[in-house]
Image 1: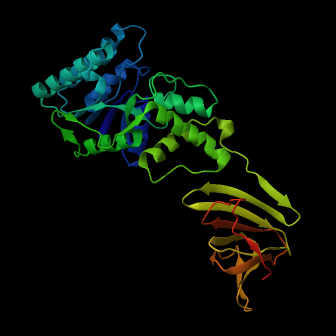
Image 2: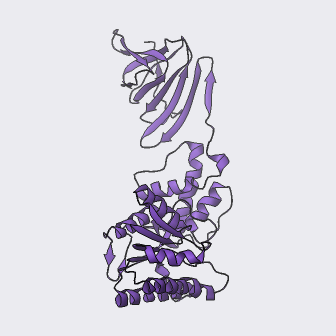
Image 3: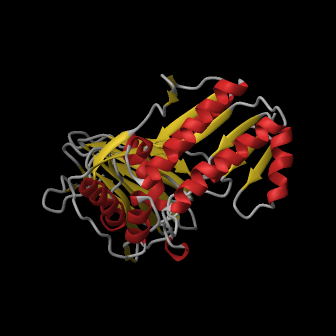
Length: 369
């Protein structure tokens, strides 16, 4: 199948083309505003499906709305008619097409043109009135509040909120691409004359800003956003895509002494805490027990032994562990325990506890194994 994508270098176009290639579609004609105009006729002559994503939304003058959204659509449809090409045509319109403003009127005019073309020429038409979109590769400080907030917050720049109670309707780019490829494969979600994105999200502008600021703060408090919430997960991925190249990495506080080091990595209120424990050769750490706190130990490098003793018993239980064979060892409550490095190199242990450490209530009591 030969697929024509107009607006190929735009936000939606880049994401769509990347996923089309992931799925094995190889003959993709990419057309954008800087493409040789003569190629458009060639592409239209050969294509089997058209994604018409090109448009104007931030012009220098109002006249450019109609020229870019209606005019170019008319040109594209004229070429399809010229070569009697019956390819289906998918158009990315906007929810603003229902509004009486210059941008909305230009989008509505383009929609009407496409509907009329479909009726007269027999081409299948798929028109999506898209809400505000968000995701990777969207241009910040242009026409996407999510991209602008993510970019500015990630880059320590201010954001502007006129009314925090304004409710936004948002769609995630991967969901849009999924629907667009479904349409290519004749599985579109049609509602009346239009097609719709199945998944959308509503959020107040102020809540959106607060959530993105919490992503920035998560590096300091070692928290993880609620990934069980689809919108939060998708917004967090979007935020990370706007990190400056020199800020991908961030330091953790290492608690270092002559025995090695202990470093907290992740803290969550509902899924516990993850830490990294480095133990030097011959060193034993631990010798304590907990009432309720439980832990999991995973030695990923080096070799050693984990010892347990029920505090009401003299029996010592031993588990020999090594980075050569990854094995998780659970630390039950009521057992005093320690871990000793038996090798001649540092032993590295990934540790999970069922609650973040609270120095006011550590639930940790010294007792030799």
